[in-house]
Length: 213
Image (tube, rainbow, N blue to C red; front, side, top):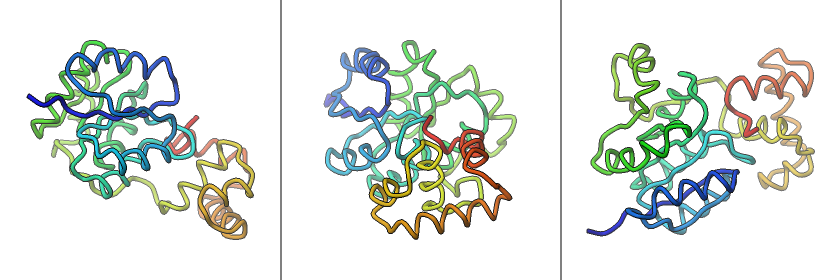
């Protein structure tokens, strides 16, 4: 039987090395990247069967990356492997198109099982948090749906990059837009949310799972 092709995305090399060791007996690891934007490019080029990614990643967080992956490589199954056990993160991940959600501390025992389940078209959630999610979402399993929050994709991108400490010039280059457009999105978001400083905007990004930090 052909081994599933897996692409890894995590900004911690030790984590990716550990995931690779778990997967390689049964899967072909075709690539490994360290940020959300590199993930989008690698996924489009490599066309993996499975994408394993973290929520907290620089330049583009995992949830926003997953939503784009759902459009660009719809055949790939997305599994989050993350430390975040809060229901807000879990539901956000599935609304972004995930098929699986595994906590890093459980990965050594559960990861291959999660891969097998999603390849069969099923949904996998770490049993440690499954009960909490089922209680919140009687209609489980989730569809991809809309992401939570009121910000547009571009606004979320700007907010994440601001929260990571990138200056306006760098943000403009990363997103391929003008510095004026960056400033416009930032001020628009701050006005909408009633935020008065970059520090408050950074706090908002962290609390809402937008920042890759």
